[in-house]
Every structure is written in structure tokens, then in C-alpha cells.
Image (cartoon, rainbow, N blue to C red; front, top):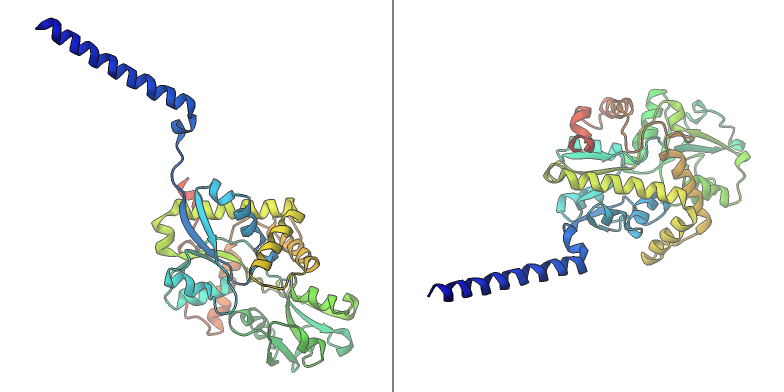
Length: 342
């Protein structure tokens, strides 16, 4: 009886030992099993406009697998007309969105608890452009003139500047083209350094024929593109927010280090979205984005992703004085420093 039990026990031990050997051999043959990667977290990001080099860093980060390296399976949605970033966040269609600080403050005041996780563009690149032939050679010279402004939040910075300087203008709504300015329908037009200014130059107007005023040089530096999410989304998974912010910054760095490859990627997304693609214009846009994003460049001044406290309060105070918002939150309540979880 005892012999039979010892024999049975021996067989069981041998079977168990064989199982252990097989398992070890399997791990040796497939070492990745020893370091199984956690599943990717799904998330979505919506830019504030259609694909173009203004958003190159995000497309590059996606194409080069940077988001996946940070554990994120990211989907980039198409922005633009009819695709409001704020509405996409509210509806749950997007987890994160690119928008201007002024836009975020206005919606935060309306009760939508937006949080800034990364301030991509630290310097305003908005300009006011006039022809020298119009004899408007200063900001004061715009008093009483027809000035083209975009509707909504994009008009806040120039209107703030005019209000501060006591300048009264004849406001004319702008569309998505510079034709009204080129045809003489307005004397001054709003423009972005990385976009409309270059379009005007490409139309045959020489830079020497223009007077260009940067709002940031006139004391109105309202930071533009930043990455925002709803407070509940950010607090619900702060590690995910950190990953999106870090991967996006790396995407921008890679785009600036490899501009031709970045342009190839941008052009691919533009064509896919049926957006007219001009490589020369996109190259200008990417170069200007480098100037306003990178610290130490023509406009950059702080570490990438940082929202300057003074610029934040300047924008909030200006909007409040203009009656555009009733108030704005504390800096610490509005910005989210993901390094706090590291």
C-alpha cells in the first residue's frame, strides 16, 4: 500500500516537474511573455481646425508611434467647420482638444470645466496688417478704419488691444480668405504669422509694401494653441493626460528635427481629409510654428508645454474688463501639472 502511494506521488511529482520545465522553455522561447506590456489606453484628440502644419506635432507623434510608446492608442479627429472642439469634449466624442486660451476661458466661465494639460504655443502670432500705401503706419493710424476681424473668440485679442489704446474701428467680418484685404475692401486685416501673412506674400504683395503689427509686441500676448480636457477626464486618468502631453511634445520636437518627413506626414493627412495641400505654404507654417513653440526661438520663452502665469492673468483680466467673462479660475485650478504624479 505504501509502495503504491509512493509510486503515485512520484508520478505526480514528475508530471509537475515536466509542466514547470515546459513553462520555463516557453518563456525562454518567447521572452516577451516575461515582460508583457499593459494594454494600450484608447483616447481621442481633436485639433481646432483641419489637418495642416499648425498641428504637425500630433500627426507626427501618431505616425511615429510615440503615443503608442507612451501606452496610448490615439485617434485624431478632424476639426474645422462644424466640428467644435468644445462640443466634441462635451458629447464625449473626444477626450482632449486643441484650442486657444481665450476660447477655454470663455467656456470655463460658462460652466464647462476645462483644464489645460499642455500649453503648446506660448506666444500669440496674431498680426494686424495694412498696406503702406494706405498711410497707416502705426496702431493709432487704424483709428476709424475698416478692420477685418474673425468672428467669435479670434476677435478677442485685437479688440482688447484696440480697447486698451482707445482706438475705435469699423469692424468688418472676415472669412477664411484674405481676398477682402487684397481687393481693397478693408484697410487693415487680421492675420496669423504662420498662415494668412504668408498667403498675402504669395499673392504677389512684397513684404516691404506692408506694415505688420504683432499683438504680442503691443502688450497683448494671449497664448494660442493648448491641449485641454474636461476636469473629470483629466482627474479620472492623470497618467493618460501625462502621456498625451509628453508624446505630443516629443512629436513636435521630432517634426522640427525632421521637417521634410513631418511635411510628408502632414500632406498625407491633408489629402486624406480632402484639404488643398500646398507644400511650400505648409513648410512656412511649420517653420513659424517652431518659432512660437520652441523655447529660445524667436518667440518661445518657457519650457515646452508651460502656460505662463502672467500671460494667463493678462488674458483673464482683459476678457473680464471687456465683459466677455464674469471671472476666471485660479491659475492652479485651471492648469494641470502632470509632473505632480511622477
